[in-house]
Length: 195
Image 1 (cartoon, rainbow, N blue to C red):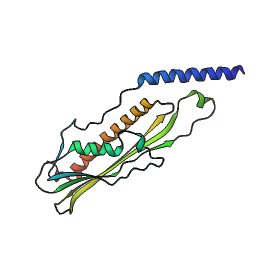
Image 2: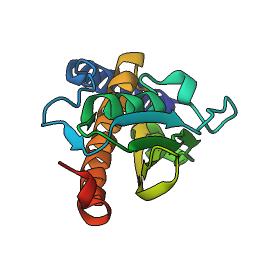
Image 3: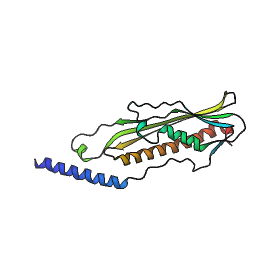
Image 4: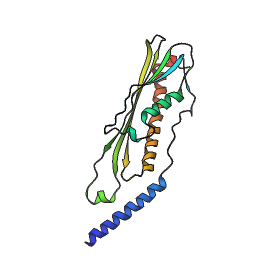
Protein backbone atom coordinates (compact mmCIF):
# COMPACT_ATOMS: atom_id res chain seq x y z
CA UNK A 1 0.00 0.00 0.00
CA UNK A 2 2.82 2.39 0.89
CA UNK A 3 4.57 1.67 -2.42
CA UNK A 4 1.38 2.56 -4.35
CA UNK A 5 1.01 5.82 -2.39
CA UNK A 6 4.68 6.66 -2.97
CA UNK A 7 4.34 6.01 -6.72
CA UNK A 8 1.21 8.19 -6.88
CA UNK A 9 3.05 11.03 -5.09
CA UNK A 10 5.98 10.77 -7.53
CA UNK A 11 3.62 10.84 -10.50
CA UNK A 12 1.75 13.89 -9.16
CA UNK A 13 4.99 15.76 -8.46
CA UNK A 14 6.41 14.90 -11.90
CA UNK A 15 3.29 15.96 -13.80
CA UNK A 16 2.89 19.10 -11.67
CA UNK A 17 6.44 20.29 -12.35
CA UNK A 18 6.07 19.49 -16.06
CA UNK A 19 2.85 21.50 -16.30
CA UNK A 20 4.49 24.51 -14.64
CA UNK A 21 7.51 24.48 -16.92
CA UNK A 22 5.31 23.99 -20.02
CA UNK A 23 3.19 27.05 -19.13
CA UNK A 24 6.29 29.20 -18.65
CA UNK A 25 7.64 28.08 -22.03
CA UNK A 26 4.44 28.86 -23.97
CA UNK A 27 5.06 31.61 -26.55
CA UNK A 28 2.64 33.85 -28.42
CA UNK A 29 1.30 32.42 -31.67
CA UNK A 30 3.29 33.08 -34.84
CA UNK A 31 1.60 35.32 -37.43
CA UNK A 32 2.17 34.19 -41.01
CA UNK A 33 3.62 36.98 -43.12
CA UNK A 34 5.35 36.49 -46.46
CA UNK A 35 6.27 40.11 -47.18
CA UNK A 36 9.77 39.74 -45.67
CA UNK A 37 11.35 39.30 -49.10
CA UNK A 38 10.88 40.90 -52.48
CA UNK A 39 7.71 39.83 -54.29
CA UNK A 40 8.12 37.28 -57.09
CA UNK A 41 7.54 39.33 -60.25
CA UNK A 42 6.05 37.24 -63.06
CA UNK A 43 6.05 38.22 -66.71
CA UNK A 44 2.27 37.87 -67.05
CA UNK A 45 -0.73 40.17 -67.40
CA UNK A 46 -2.53 38.68 -64.39
CA UNK A 47 -1.81 36.23 -61.56
CA UNK A 48 -4.76 34.10 -60.43
CA UNK A 49 -5.32 31.97 -57.33
CA UNK A 50 -7.47 28.84 -57.48
CA UNK A 51 -8.09 25.84 -55.18
CA UNK A 52 -9.12 22.30 -56.00
CA UNK A 53 -8.76 21.15 -52.41
CA UNK A 54 -11.98 20.51 -50.49
CA UNK A 55 -11.34 20.07 -46.74
CA UNK A 56 -12.93 17.08 -45.02
CA UNK A 57 -14.34 16.96 -41.50
CA UNK A 58 -13.67 13.23 -41.14
CA UNK A 59 -10.82 12.03 -38.90
CA UNK A 60 -7.88 11.92 -39.13
CA UNK A 61 -8.25 15.37 -40.81
CA UNK A 62 -8.25 18.26 -38.32
CA UNK A 63 -8.28 21.35 -40.60
CA UNK A 64 -11.32 22.75 -38.80
CA UNK A 65 -9.46 22.82 -35.47
CA UNK A 66 -6.40 24.83 -36.58
CA UNK A 67 -5.87 28.42 -37.62
CA UNK A 68 -4.72 29.26 -40.13
CA UNK A 69 -5.57 26.18 -42.16
CA UNK A 70 -2.97 24.99 -44.67
CA UNK A 71 -5.26 26.18 -47.47
CA UNK A 72 -5.51 29.68 -45.93
CA UNK A 73 -1.72 29.78 -45.55
CA UNK A 74 -1.21 28.90 -49.22
CA UNK A 75 -3.72 31.54 -50.36
CA UNK A 76 -1.98 34.18 -48.22
CA UNK A 77 1.41 33.11 -49.60
CA UNK A 78 0.20 33.52 -53.20
CA UNK A 79 -1.43 36.89 -52.43
CA UNK A 80 1.72 38.27 -50.81
CA UNK A 81 4.44 36.66 -52.93
CA UNK A 82 3.19 36.49 -56.54
CA UNK A 83 2.91 39.68 -58.61
CA UNK A 84 2.02 40.15 -62.27
CA UNK A 85 4.46 42.40 -64.12
CA UNK A 86 3.79 41.85 -67.82
CA UNK A 87 1.37 42.69 -70.59
CA UNK A 88 0.13 39.26 -71.71
CA UNK A 89 -0.48 35.68 -70.53
CA UNK A 90 -1.74 34.36 -67.20
CA UNK A 91 -0.09 32.78 -64.15
CA UNK A 92 -2.42 30.45 -62.24
CA UNK A 93 -1.53 29.24 -58.75
CA UNK A 94 -3.70 26.21 -57.91
CA UNK A 95 -3.88 24.50 -54.52
CA UNK A 96 -4.07 20.75 -55.17
CA UNK A 97 -3.84 19.35 -51.63
CA UNK A 98 -3.73 20.96 -48.17
CA UNK A 99 -4.70 18.55 -45.38
CA UNK A 100 -3.50 18.37 -41.80
CA UNK A 101 -4.04 15.08 -40.00
CA UNK A 102 -3.56 13.85 -36.43
CA UNK A 103 -2.74 10.21 -35.68
CA UNK A 104 -3.13 9.03 -32.08
CA UNK A 105 0.03 7.32 -30.78
CA UNK A 106 0.24 4.35 -28.41
CA UNK A 107 1.42 5.11 -24.88
CA UNK A 108 4.04 3.04 -23.09
CA UNK A 109 2.62 0.99 -20.25
CA UNK A 110 3.77 0.38 -16.72
CA UNK A 111 5.88 2.65 -14.54
CA UNK A 112 7.64 4.24 -17.50
CA UNK A 113 4.32 5.31 -18.99
CA UNK A 114 3.24 6.83 -15.66
CA UNK A 115 6.46 8.78 -15.09
CA UNK A 116 7.19 10.16 -18.56
CA UNK A 117 5.49 12.64 -20.84
CA UNK A 118 5.14 11.04 -24.24
CA UNK A 119 3.94 12.07 -27.66
CA UNK A 120 0.16 11.80 -27.84
CA UNK A 121 -0.38 12.52 -31.53
CA UNK A 122 1.59 12.68 -34.77
CA UNK A 123 0.51 15.62 -36.93
CA UNK A 124 1.18 15.64 -40.67
CA UNK A 125 0.65 18.63 -42.94
CA UNK A 126 0.80 18.36 -46.72
CA UNK A 127 1.06 21.33 -49.07
CA UNK A 128 0.80 20.68 -52.79
CA UNK A 129 0.31 23.43 -55.36
CA UNK A 130 0.80 24.00 -59.05
CA UNK A 131 1.96 27.14 -60.81
CA UNK A 132 0.95 27.23 -64.47
CA UNK A 133 1.54 29.76 -67.21
CA UNK A 134 -1.24 30.06 -69.79
CA UNK A 135 -1.80 32.16 -72.87
CA UNK A 136 -4.82 34.46 -72.94
CA UNK A 137 -6.88 31.71 -74.62
CA UNK A 138 -6.17 29.35 -71.69
CA UNK A 139 -3.62 27.07 -73.38
CA UNK A 140 -0.91 25.87 -70.97
CA UNK A 141 2.54 27.13 -71.91
CA UNK A 142 4.57 26.06 -68.88
CA UNK A 143 4.26 25.00 -65.26
CA UNK A 144 5.39 22.85 -62.34
CA UNK A 145 4.13 21.38 -59.08
CA UNK A 146 5.59 21.71 -55.59
CA UNK A 147 4.81 19.35 -52.70
CA UNK A 148 5.96 19.63 -49.08
CA UNK A 149 5.09 17.12 -46.32
CA UNK A 150 6.06 17.75 -42.71
CA UNK A 151 5.41 15.63 -39.59
CA UNK A 152 5.70 16.59 -35.93
CA UNK A 153 4.70 14.91 -32.66
CA UNK A 154 2.46 16.67 -30.12
CA UNK A 155 3.20 15.86 -26.46
CA UNK A 156 0.42 14.65 -24.19
CA UNK A 157 -1.12 17.07 -21.69
CA UNK A 158 -0.60 20.22 -23.79
CA UNK A 159 -2.82 23.21 -23.08
CA UNK A 160 -4.91 24.97 -25.73
CA UNK A 161 -2.31 27.77 -25.93
CA UNK A 162 0.55 25.30 -26.32
CA UNK A 163 -1.39 23.43 -29.02
CA UNK A 164 -1.94 26.71 -30.86
CA UNK A 165 1.76 27.55 -30.59
CA UNK A 166 2.68 24.04 -31.76
CA UNK A 167 0.54 24.50 -34.90
CA UNK A 168 1.80 28.05 -35.55
CA UNK A 169 5.41 26.86 -35.51
CA UNK A 170 4.62 23.82 -37.63
CA UNK A 171 2.74 25.71 -40.37
CA UNK A 172 5.35 28.52 -40.40
CA UNK A 173 8.21 26.02 -40.90
CA UNK A 174 6.24 24.16 -43.58
CA UNK A 175 5.46 27.39 -45.43
CA UNK A 176 9.13 28.46 -45.29
CA UNK A 177 10.04 25.18 -46.98
CA UNK A 178 7.21 25.60 -49.50
CA UNK A 179 8.40 29.14 -50.35
CA UNK A 180 11.96 27.91 -50.92
CA UNK A 181 10.79 25.03 -53.13
CA UNK A 182 8.52 27.28 -55.21
CA UNK A 183 11.38 29.68 -55.86
CA UNK A 184 13.65 26.78 -56.76
CA UNK A 185 10.96 25.41 -59.09
CA UNK A 186 10.64 28.75 -60.84
CA UNK A 187 14.39 28.91 -61.41
CA UNK A 188 14.56 25.31 -62.62
CA UNK A 189 11.35 24.87 -64.64
CA UNK A 190 10.06 28.33 -65.56
CA UNK A 191 12.90 30.88 -65.49
CA UNK A 192 11.61 32.78 -68.52
CA UNK A 193 8.50 33.83 -66.57
CA UNK A 194 10.41 35.56 -63.76
CA UNK A 195 11.36 39.21 -64.08
